[in-house]
Length: 481
Ligand code: GDP
Image (cartoon, rainbow, N blue to C red; front, side):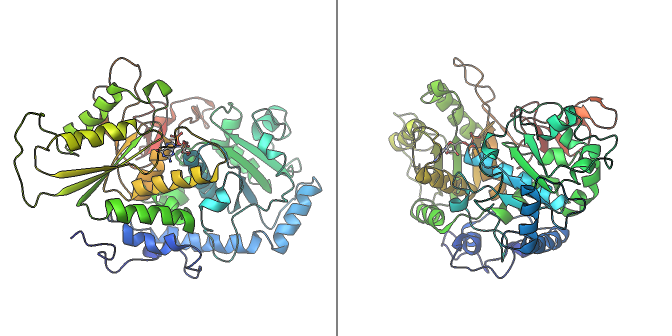
């Protein structure tokens, strides 16, 4: 009925058991208040997932920072010795690149940690410590700043000798004789978009068996590697049990892990109440121009309006000369535009001010910020980006930009299957059709392996199991459906 914010009753504070009880509410308001702002019903968390999360939280508490087990594991690493059968094993997720990439990377590392009974520790750099609340009760998910490898792992790359790929190449680790050598103290998992064939062996069963003996894994990825985990046979049974709905994996992971800190939550809620709450419908449009020449492009503007009009997401406008037909009781729509620049926002807003809509509906157009360009390591910039992703996720309907992890995070958090604007392939013609309806709300895994681990030869990984398919925005990518 439009009344807000207490229209949804009773608010399901713990999201159907997805969230643990017993965390301090005041230190993380978003965790408990978000259900009052969301209108789209969330997918119900599967009972097996809930049980597994509670077990995993226990592991994080038992082995996490400030425990004896953690001190022993760090000592072992400092001594440069691999432990034969360590009591606790770890995966450290390096945080780098844009916020969308960082969120997808942390979610991927977390699922891998859950599947392999490892503690997840997130590198706190790039504001990862300031943007999010702690997800696990009674412990921290942030890697302590005095972690022995902390100063060197920022430079870890495809060439690092301790990378899994290079250790395979140099026969420091072998899949044909996994138990014959002492495991190294740590292995660096280079799962970055530029990774090589040996690094990609990560997605094979034999290699997972080798890695399971290594106490510390340091992972660098800017990718949503989860569809790749669904191709590892050893993980499949558990994944089936944890996620009977394969299109909701990131949805559950994101709602479990990523809660805006109080500062960011203030940005989200103030904006939502002021500009979005009263509307009957909230349409989010995420405009991401990867090519700077398209920052102010009439063609892209035409692509956006043609998408929202042909898909009937917004009412069309009358020609400037047409008479206005007054309509009482017509519904109102609020459009939330997020973009680094304000050009598209100004055009679309102007359009709905200058002209009447064919249906008599009112359309308000809003854009929280226009930061100009992507920036790195600036606190207010990342906070705004996170707030805008979150605001998009509170919309009823989404139009996103293909290729963008920023949009993927919003759609997954929101539980919304978006309309996706095709990435323009040239500067002279708008893509036709302008957009497509995505098959699922899952993010796309942009650079998957193309290898059949059993047959040991190249293969199309988009054709191995029915629920891992190629993405429509990036044809070689993989997504869960
Ligand atoms: P991707 O590059 O689109 O995959 O998304 P990322 O989030 O990984 O990186 C883009 C970064 O640029 C974001 O993290 C923001 O810092 C910035 N950015 C891109 N689009 C927007 C936007 O609409 N609003 C804001 N505030 N920042 C944005």
